[in-house]
Image 1 (cartoon, rainbow, N blue to C red):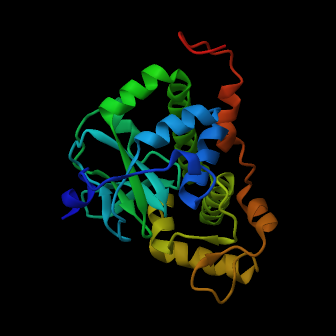
Image 2 (cartoon, rainbow, N blue to C red; image 1 turned 90 degrees about the vertical axis):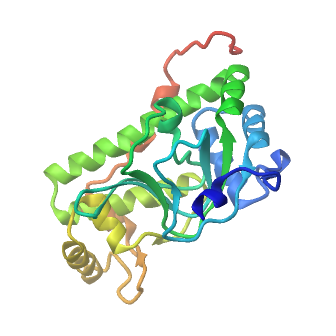
Length: 271
């Protein structure tokens, strides 16, 4: 069933490259890639090759272990890259938002991993780009290659911060940092608001904590009036205090901008 959902067909709908700021999906994609140093013409070239796929329901794997010959871009919703552990539990490596390539690592290292997958945490809209089209695109638009490189640097930076927090900080600090990170990443692509669209189970699987420990931590943040006391969702009401508890400065999220200042020359790219 999943294979039928994700296999490109003659009914695939391409995205409108002239509507980069006209819809949530394309505007988020535009903001993400512009933050990585991509000009509008390069972005339009990418969008023209994306093929929209049927919507994916929450809880369904967007990408499983099989190699499919295309990369998937998240257009709307929230997803996560995770590994299924031997005991059946889930270890979340990263959360993914509109504009993120869900499986860029498989394009670079096309190795089958039976445990790695990408799951829709909310209902998601995705688009795909064939590897052949992606290779041709990168050959014609070299700066897109730099953007994808900066994306991988950002992902590595986020993972390093997560591991560092797990080793040095308390559960309260780790959970607070994780929530601050999600708000900052969403704001970077124009998604404002105080709610963090992940569950306590997602937080536990990302922070390597038990669900009981996370629940107690969430309740403490609510008692401190940092999170909404009555909302079933995770909703931040005092972001400044949350950042103080976390020791969050977001510097590691600026890695792509820091790298973009390097004097990098790409053969064939305009100076």
